[in-house]
Structure formats: structure tokens, C-alpha cells
Image 1 (spheres, helix red, strand yellow):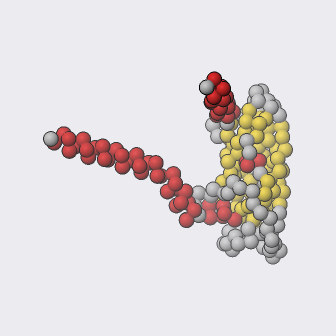
Image 2 (cartoon, helix red, strand yellow):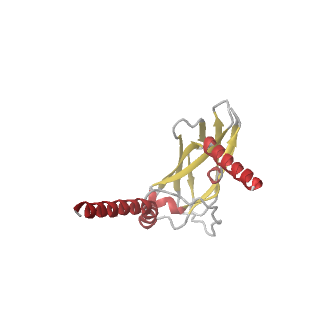
Image 3 (tube, helix red, strand yellow):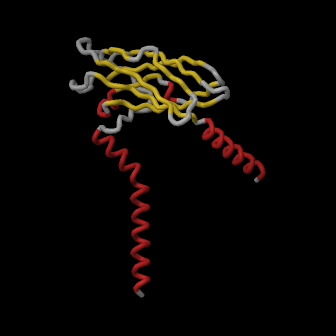
Length: 188
């Protein structure tokens, strides 16, 4: 009888921990949206700004770093630019696959300070799509963005940072699974 009660308590505790772990990601996203923390910029194409503030300058700097052993080198042609809020700005990035084999690059952006993330709007960005690159290939990308006119006055500079991932294996596995599903449907 005692073991039955203990077993029920342990089972409820296990289910509660599983539910909490499952809800953690959406709760974290809501927390970041409410507090403006984490620096996760939107991954959607922004609409063009209607206004420009000529009297204000904001410095935007760019950094990149590869995650793990991702064989990519990506550098901005300009390491920083001074922009007027609302004005479209283009910055060129040079990307190179430093390996001998074909690879797929995925860049994930973040903005610092985190509260400025929602004020940096990208119209064109290599981070929107996966970027297939041949071995030793060098490619030029253009980032087109503007800083929102609603950017708080205490933010005078921000950094757009890209983390570079090699997603070749993951894409290959996904394609193999999809191909396998198609074959299974044909045989059915």
C-alpha cells in the first residue's frame, strides 16, 4: 500500500517535470518578448521605413563567428556603419567556404543590446535562407537594413552578430527522410 502511494507521487512528479520542460521554450520566448532580452531579431523581411531622423546617428557594428567546426569565414566589408534611424543602409558581406567540399551555411543573427533587437529591421539578409556553397567558393551577400525611428534615445550603438552553422548533414538527413517517404507512398 505504501509503495503504491509512493509510486503515484513519483509518477506525478515525473509528469510534472516533463510538462515543465515541454513548456520551457515557449515560456522563455514570451519572457524574452516581454522583457526585450536575448537580442533575437525578427527573421521576417521588414517593410520599408516611412520616416528618417536626420538629426540622429546610431553606430551599428557587425561581427561573425563560426559555431563548432563550421568551415565558413564571413566578414562585413565595413565593420561598422553610422546610420540615421529610418534610412535604408546596405552592407556587403564576403562569405567563403574554406573547406574543399560543398557545404550549406546558415547564419543566425542576434543583436546587442538585447532591447535594441526589435528596432533593427532587415529587408534583405543572407540569414533568411540556407546558403549552399561549393568547396572553396567565395560569395558576396548584401545586408539591407534600417534602424527604427522608435529606437530609445539611450541606445547610441548596437551590434549585429551572426553565428555561422554548417547544416549540410542536417539538410542531407531531412532530404533522405523526405525521399524515403516519397518512395513509401509510391509503393503504397
